[in-house]
Length: 375
Image 1 (cartoon, helix red, strand yellow):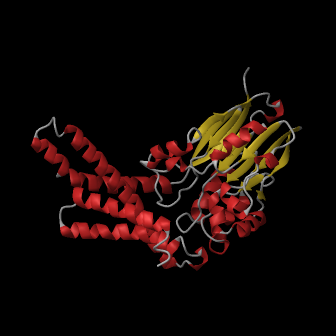
Image 2 (cartoon, rainbow, N blue to C red):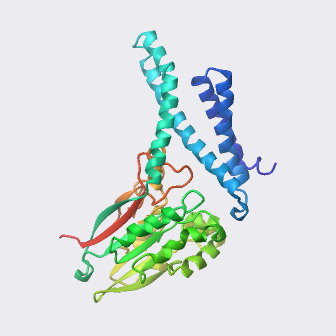
Image 3 (tube, rainbow, N blue to C red):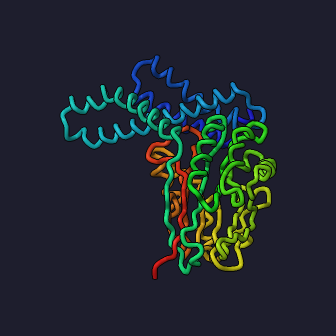
C-alpha cells in the first residue's frame, strides 16, 4: 500500500487514467476493445510499483520479461496517444470547413488508421534502436590549439544503458566499431549500466577491450547511482577504465599535453558528492571536461574549459519527446553548441533507455576531431 500511495505513483495513476479515458472515448467504441486497452495501461502502471521500488539484484528472468513487455506497451501507447491527438486536432480545425461525411472519415476509418500507424511507428522505432549506433564525426575548432594536438580524435560512448534489453552482443558491436576508428582516446560519459554488477558484469565485459587501452576514461551518470555506484566504480576500474570523480588527468601526446577532467553526476548530491568542475580543471593548455548532464555547462564554462562532452538527454529518443526535451535542456540538447567560449557536445545516446525505440533520433557513437580554429 505504501508503494501505491507514493506521490509519483499517484500522479502516474492520474495521468494513465486520463490517457485511458481519452483513448477509450475517442478511439475505441466497443466494450471489448476498451477492456483490452486496460492491459497495456496496467503493464505501464506496475513498473514503478513493482520494479523501480525493488532492488535490481532480486529481479528474475520473469521480471525482465514483464518489464520489457511494459516498456513495449509504453512506447506503443505513446504513439497511439500522439496520433490520436494529432487526428483530433485536424478534426477540430477542419470540422467547420469540410462536409460532415469527410469529417466523419477522420473518426472512422480514421481510428483504424491511427491504431495501425501506432504499431508501424513502434516497429520502425525498435528497428532503428536495435540496429545499433551510427558513427558521427564532429570537428571542433579550438582557439590556439597546440599544433601537436591538431587532428586529435576522441571516441565518445554515452548512455549505453546496458540492461536486460541491451546485452553483451550490443556492447560487443559498439566496442568493435570503436576499435576500428583509430581514436587517441575513448570516453564513456555516464549511464552505461542499468542494473547491478552481479547481473550485468558479463554484458559489460567487452569494454575491457576498448582501444587505445592506455586512454579509456569513464564518468558517472545518474543511472550508475541508481544501480549501485560504489560497486560499479570498482568494477569499471577492474576492466581497465580510468574513473574520474571530480578530478583530472594530464595526457601527453606528441610532446604536448591536454588535461581531461571528469565530474560526478548531480544525482550524487544526495549522498554528499555532487559535481565539482573546479576540481576537474587542469593547470593550463587544452582542458576538456566530461560531464554527463549538459546542465553543468554554465558552471564549467567560466572556469576555462575548452570543450565539454555530455550525454543524458537522449535527444528525446522518440516522438514527441524529441521535441519536448528542447524545452528542458536548451540550448544544449544534442550535438555541438557553445556556452560562452566553451564548446559543448551532447551525444544523443549510444543505446536507449526504457522503450527500446528510436524515432526522430538515432543512437550514436561520436568521434570528436580537434582542429585549430582559424583566426
